Length: 130
Image 1: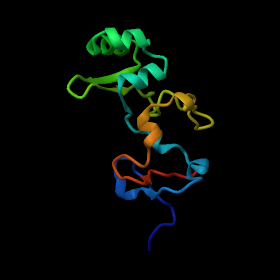
Image 2 (image 1 turned 180 degrees about the vertical axis):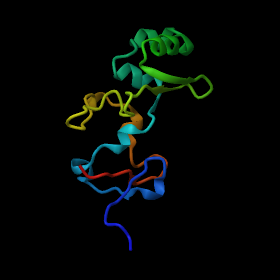
Image 3 (image 1 turned 45 degrees about the vertical axis):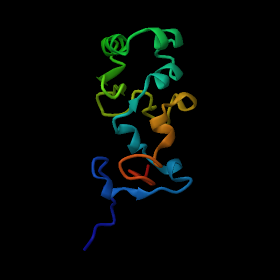
Image 4 (image 1 turned 90 degrees about the vertical axis):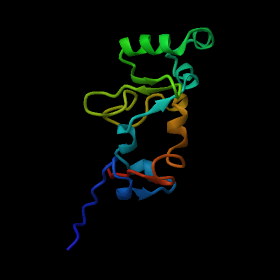
C-alpha cells in the first residue's frame, strides 16, 4: 500500500510536482534549499557588488571578497558563475525562516526568476505543503 504522505527530495526531480499557478502559496519553499548559481549582474541587483566594481574588477577578486564575507560558497571562473551561500540548515540566506518567503523577491537572481520553467526538471518543482 502506498503512503498518502508525499515525500519530496530536492535532489531527486522524479519526486517533484508539476508546477501550476498558486502552488507557491502553500509550499514550504523547498526550491530555496537548492544551490543558487548567479552571474555578476545578479550580484549587482542584490546590492552585493557595485556596478563600477562589476565592470572594472576581475571576477576572481570579487569572488575572493564575497567568499571571505561568506556571501558565496563557490565560484566557477570557467562559467563565470557564483554559488550563493546557504545557512547551516540548508536554506537560502535570503529566505525568511518563519514566513518561508523570499526577503529579496524584487531583486532575486535570474535563476530564481526562471524557476521552475528552467532547472533540473523544467515545469516541475520540489513542492512540499506547509
